[in-house]
Length: 383
Image (cartoon, rainbow, N blue to C red; front, side, top):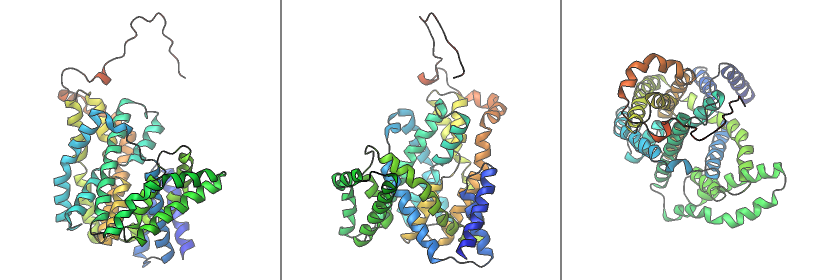
């Protein structure tokens, strides 16, 4: 049965790639179709799902970067986005997606968080990764990633005994981990070392009666930003993405009739996000065009929101049906958001007369034209 499921998953991924959409949307669709056919899951898929989540959080720990957060406009706009928290938390509570206050907070922040991966891919494809709006969008997205991660850690430690907090000491193993890392002289050994550390962190966390995904995260922090560790993260990426297909299949299997209604309500809430991005940026002196492009770029739900929902389910704060509803909302937002982001410039031209009215006098320094006073020669080229 599993080979057939994987073949269907592969074919759905091929179709989605040809359509220019994220492959995990195909995985969700296959999961929903399998539910209709009466498939309820398999232990091997559950193992793949868990291992994929461990590797995801391990690589997050390896590559955690905070340099982009120091700009005032980044954290000021990110904080303004968090003003949506009461609205999202009230909606999640009313829709029955959670009762625990901290779990509601974690899920609300995770949903406010946009898809950094999709944003980066689209910007890179359009050659706008270094554009002002691209840098702003990525910075705000990374800030919300960090906030989501911090709250997820707090939720994971809720109700944990004293021994569970020992996972916070995993980064202190850095000298030992660095010595072991230097012994991995071949790419295969580096990949094996990364998988081993992720599983070791999860197993030690289980032994200490702490959430296993957090053990993998803090083990990754033990080698964070260490020279050469980026190669490990790159080699783990393909394996992680392959294993996470089981996570998305499981989420698709959990989508029921009630989840469709809840997912549609969450999609309607998505309309608030671009508004809460546009106005704070305009008030800080950015042009309406820049603010609009940032709002469109961040106007999706993140696949991390779905991962956070899955972890909350493992902690007993969410039901599988709730995870399925979140999966539907995340998938729907990316299905609608990716084409919109591709045509963002054309959309702005249509609404420019109205949005331009909100610009304030005086531009932000980054929006000011760059002069060439004092230069004798100006060389213009394509490359």
